[in-house]
Image 1: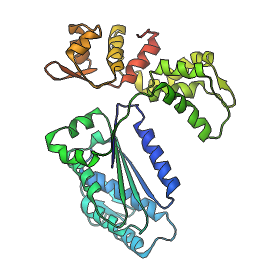
Image 2: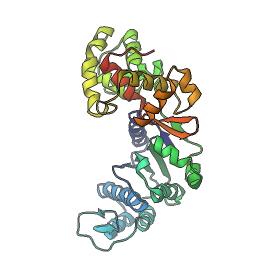
Image 3: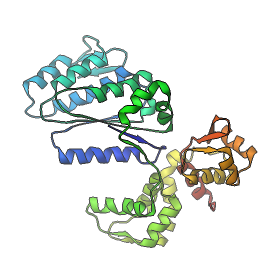
Image 4: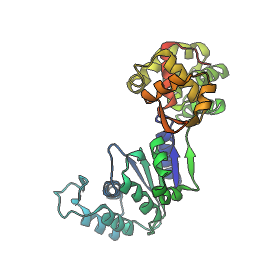
Amino acid sequence: MLLLNGYRGSGKTSVLRKIEALTLAARSDAIVVEIPLRIHSSEDRLLASVVQEVARQLEGRAGAGDRVRAFLSRVHGLSIAGTGVTLGASAASRPTSGLAVWRECIDSLPDGSILLICVDDAELLDTSGLGALKTIAETQGRVPIVLIVAGGVELADRLSQPDTSPIARIFSAGRFDIGELSPSETGEALNAPIRAADLHGGWTTDAIELVHRLSRGYPFLVQCLAHAAFIEGSTVEVSRVQASVPEALEVGGSWLERECASASDEDIRAFAKIADVGRPRLRSSEILSLGIQSPYIGRLVRQKILKKISRGQYELRKAPVIAYYHALARGLRLG
């Protein structure tokens, strides 16, 4: 079981998709389920969504056994109470619970397969939804179940509470914080997609270094700059990266331009200094040591860039990429 923590835009979804692709490459018979949460979700909604996707995949498989066909016929048109989820296209028949159809689903899976469940934006799970993660992880069935959960800092906060410690323990051996890329990782992030797509071209060492400096190694900005600068069949040089910055900002602007839009240049500089520390939680003395004066800490709290979590303790709440984006857009020099 794996838990991926990170700010928005840090690459959690890309990691999930890579794991899904590697799983299918290694096991063509694997059942790979991705649940991208969009609204606050309960146990019933999460489990029903998983079963809905499993059923969709099984319906499309040739040679499904009698057990699978019997399961699909039983749940076709089944309405999961309180979730808005109906399995199949028929009119709703008998409402039931997500847990009930989950158990029936697991008992019906074809022998010798593997079930990979990836839950994205898991901070949208309510208390019962978080409990459903433990239910999935502890389910014993005909096939191995692998659960991978990705979420932001809010999820990490909730899993650190005493009442959620049993849920946090299922990820005790596999919890990873997704953050900025190192210079060498930035180079790999720029070149690996070219190799994977069997394209021609590449990046000079100086161009990679500039992308890393401009993006601070933040995966979303690296991706925006790569999208804007790379031309198939050519080697990207420093001048090309510099010229592509406006287009890269336009690519990321649909999300990032709205964030901290009313912040002053000094706000962005302070935000970037805190982000560069590389830790989500800092003491007030650490923030002061960065040259950020005490009244300014309060201003950053009011702008919801920082959150005061206890006396003298603050947490960075907005993704560092927001500061780096605005610094590029405003032409600010950061230390």
